[in-house]
Image 1 (cartoon, rainbow, N blue to C red):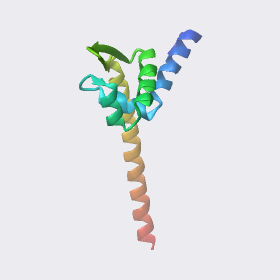
Image 2 (image 1 turned 45 degrees about the vertical axis):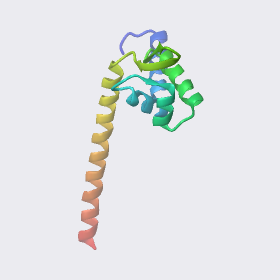
Image 3 (image 1 turned 45 degrees about the horizontal axis):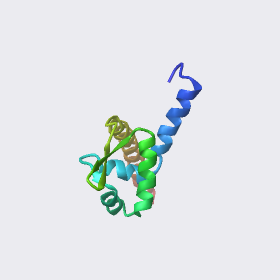
Length: 116
């Protein structure tokens, strides 16, 4: 991130802001293997069509998803597969953190049981 302009930093912050919403992450995860319609995504994410459409708009604005019309149905797919590398990296770090925290809690509980 060295030597980035303020404008570049603002765009990076907006990119991460779009990823900071659980429904958008569910949508991205649902698109990992194949394109899907708004209706399919709404069913998978258990959201209204309007809500999914709003989230897809935000994801498209950041260049993460692309829309393709097939007849009267619009399908969405991933426009930037690199988002999965980023998400997998973050998820891996969070998983390691939780595992370390759980290990520490188990060790603490074992010490407490021995004292009892």
